Length: 319
Ligand SMILES: [Zn+2]
Image 1 (tube, rainbow, N blue to C red):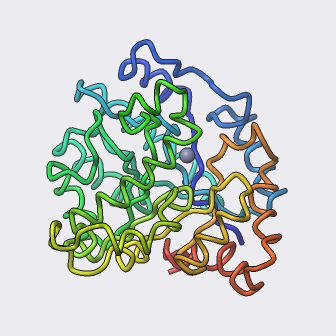
Image 2: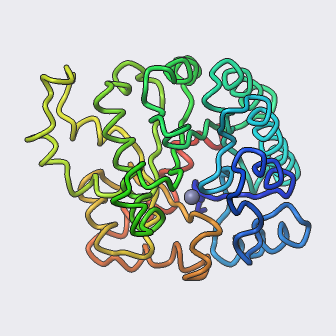
């Protein structure tokens, strides 16, 4: 079965809670697609999964809107809301859903509490980290306690862009935060993790980076040439560390991008993802996975590995 590791869920109460964290931003229902916790939406979501051959979705909070902000109480409330809502959906359909736990960053003690609650009490399969919190990369030192805890548990971190245009007016002034900025965020977190030696310091963490890692797969050789190992005291070439990460297949149907990522990382480091419901504006949910079977230059066995085998192994489903 296909396990979609990149699927958003927008419970109404969580959307309302985000209003306190993102004043002035449009946080109401953005998409005319079944992404809320309304009964009709849940049924429609399940029907789309059935049609697409998706056996399970792993749920994350809103695409660009994590429960992050200055107000710790508001962050905690929002994180608990979305985690409880996701846990309820998982409990109701244990064969159809899993969830990553969302954290009230940048509040570390509160995040560690919610991390424990999510993994221990709510049975979640890993931790969602948006790539920055209050415009600080989550690879910065103040976030290391999160990595320490995830490492102790041998658990998973699933990253997601914030759509902040990597804090650059060269992206935001041109309205490119979603179209290109998100891919740059993906690349930036991979590079920050490498520069901070986080994979070698926390070797029992499984790292999942979305959207094929943005431009990372086409840059491995360049990174080995121009990313100074000496300056960052790297234990291994950047390309080796980049190949330790896992990447989801959200690529808007780009054969060239998937082919590049497959050649760079291998089929056993690629996991099916949809960015549900974002791509429903452009293609059917079924199409978000079926195009992968049409990339002629990838051997059939590797297509099966990407679509059906890697995610259950990484998520340790069935153990
Ligand atoms: Zn997403």
